[in-house]
Structures are given as structure tokens and as C-alpha cells.
Length: 238
Length: 238
DNA sequence: CGTAACTTTGATTAGTATCAAAAATGGTGG
DNA sequence: CCACCATTTTTGATACTAATCAAAGTTACG
Image (cartoon, rainbow over all chains, first blue to last red):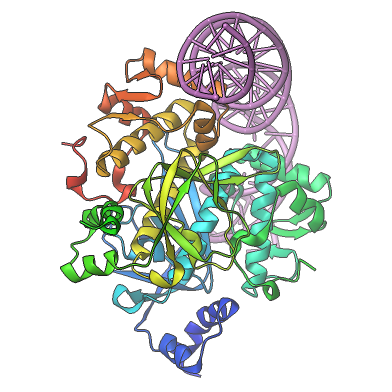
């Protein structure tokens, strides 16, 4: 298998979750023009106001989309992981309306804007997640908000083959979690501790084990439908 | 001009804001298969869990997208107005992940899912607005949140030719506003009154006049870029 | 006019933020 | 391998924004 094929397998796997690709579809994906870029943590992939010329397929690591508001607070809008397309949301727009940064060391494949068009579905799923986040941040209390994020990550990581059922390495500091759920880091910490004391989760460093999926999902008001993954992609639901 | 052309002019106008359509593009839009549907206030266009078979172009009135959370609270995710496509976000997905309802009496044109494909750009703008709302609800206080919504409405209504500079009929009760900004109706009321006392806005019934655009936009942390409208679409900015 | 929906005002409470600082962790150079 | 430093996590005490509960005005409308 060529190096290029190795890079693109995560994307192919991800697409295969939703659609049945013919061999020629797969060939088309593997033939996308591309170049690799290595990112240090915190590096900007896209800045608000940029005129986008490409988008990225993530090979490894995590990236975030984020916005700043006037108070100086930062709001994380989405977290992206290996196998996901980053910035389809921006690439056809005249101006990027938010920043994209690496959260961890990360590797991406650059795909020029001329080479896409296949990925509308992905953008719709993105938007679906945004909507869920509006509801999460707007209408759930601290406990439910954190629980919801933990559930979402569990399901998405499992779908990407990056986690065993309900166990994963959380790629974010409590500070960053706070920006994702619109809370203070102090309150994120207290909420995580409380979820631990309730025996819904166990933590060690940043690894998370969901010890009671049912109760956590209930606490979170979590329904995975908005992720638009096929049934078979998750073992958590029986 | 035929009846069908009359219905579709709002959409054409809207598209022309962003792209320069050739005559044959315009013909293609006018040739979309369609049928008209009349909605009473509160009627459901789409329900969460539906298998979407079509999307809608709004002719008149307002519709909202919304989600419910476990507490019984409702979160409005977007408000749509005449000339806008409703539910591009859902139409290619297997299951709709949120409800769409009419807010007012409304008229829409039904467009079957086979007849689209041109509208990716619109979905990206939708998603951009979702992101802004996450930030709004997550990180702005009551005053800024309300101010932001008022600014967004002013710019969008003006772009749609539905409002003079900074004056418009707000299509929502304070109860509904509360659901859109994730506050209580009581606090929405107090915040509106405060904005009035500060002389940033004037209200009479549900009509809103922005008396001090600069100060309101500053209070709102409002930057219209996320709406991805062309410069010429708004006179508010000089 | 009478009734339901909506807006406004008031009093109290609750959930998070804020401010501060101590403990734990991870990485680095000596 | 240890000592040191920066970062992150944890704990505590207090303040404040917005929620809640309640009820009086107001407006729309049949």
C-alpha cells in the first residue's frame, strides 16, 4: 500500500460508515490531490477572515474550531479527530468565520478547494452537531452539559475506531473543556468530580471510563441521532 | 409573470446577493418542481426523526427550527424568513434531527429532494449562523445576547428587503425570544426594557427601531461576517 | 366586553462565576 | 535521577447574574 493510501484510509473508513462506495468511488478519493502538513499544538490552520483555499483531512491528533467574544472568553465550537474532514464548513465561503487550531500535535492532508464537492453530507452532519451544541450550552445545566460532551466523545471515538466501549483518552484540559461547554474551569472540575462520586464515570489523568453508560446518557439527555452515524458504528447501544 | 415565477423571485433575489447567476441558472431555478403549502402558526413542517423527502422555500411568514431538552425547555436554533430555503440541513440526512415549525402564518414552496444540489453554499451559511449562536448562548451575558439577536435580525431582514435600516417588526413573542437566546421570558423582558432605557432601541408592541446602531452592535459584540452577505446587502454599515 | 395570551413588575432563591491559593502532575536541565 | 518550574487540577469562600415564583397590567380578539 502506497504512503498516500495509508493517509487516506481513515477518510475512506469514515465514509464507508455512511455510504457504500463503489471501487471507482474509492479510487477517486485516493486520487485526490494532497500534501501533508504537520501541526504543533495550538497552531492555526485557518484564521477568521481568511480566504479559504483548501480544506484538511485529519490523519492524527485533534483540532478545534473556535470563536472569541468581546469579553475575551473563547468558545470552542467543535472538536475534530483523525479521519474527519476539517473545514468543509469554510472552504466554499468567501471568508472563514472562525478559527481552526490544533489542540494536540496533529497531522493533516491538505486538499485544494477544487477537489471536493463530494462532501456535502459531512457538512450537514457538522451543522447538526452545532445545533446540538447550541441546545447543550443554552439549556442544559453543568452536570448535563459535561455528561453530554463525554457521551458524544465516546460515541464518535468508538465510531472512528479510536476507543473501546466507553473508555477513551480525553484530548482536552479542563480549561479547554470549559470553553467547549461554556463554563468556568473550576466548575468543570467540580462537575467532573461529582460525576465520579456518583459513579457514572471513572477518571485517571485524562483517561475517561464511562462506568454507567445508561445513567450518564440519562444525565446528559443524550440521544446519538444528531451524529447521524449508522447503527453498526457503536456497540454502546444494544 | 407567471404565478410560479412570482413565488420564486424571493429565492432568486437571495441567490443573487451571493452569486451572479446566468440566465440559464435562473431558468433552472424557476423550473424547479414545486407545490405550495399554507401553514398556520405552530404547524410542524418537519419533525425530529422524520425521513426527509423534500425541503421548502419560504414565500412568506416565519419558521423556526427547534430542539427540546429533557427539562422540558425548548431551544430555538434558527429563525427563517421569506426567500430562505428551509431544511437544506435535513434533506440529505437519513433522519431529521430537529423540528421545523411555523412561527407565524406562512406559505412555502415544497421542493422534492431530487431537485436540489445547488444549495450547498446555503447550508454552509446556515452552519455559520449556528456557530455564532453557540458562542452567543454560551459566552455572552443577557444584554449582549438580546442585542446580538436584534442586530442579526436587522441585517438579515434588510438584506431580504423586508426592513428599512434598523426598523422592523420582530416576529417573536418574548417567550419565543427567550427560547432563542436561552433565557427566561422574564429576563428577556427586563433586558429589552433596559436596552430601551439606555436608548439603544425603541419598541412599540413588537416593532423594533434600533436608535443607536453603533452602541447596540458594540453591546452585542456583533460582527456581520458570519452571515456571509455581500457588502452591498446592508446599508447599516457605511 | 370577556377571555386568553402576552408583557411588566416585585421578591426571593439558586446555580455558576469569581477570586484565591494549595496540591498534583509533567517535563527539563543539571 | 533529582530538583525545579510551568501547567493543570483541586479545594475553599464569597458575589452576582439570571431563574423562579407570583401576580398585576396590557393587548388582541372572538
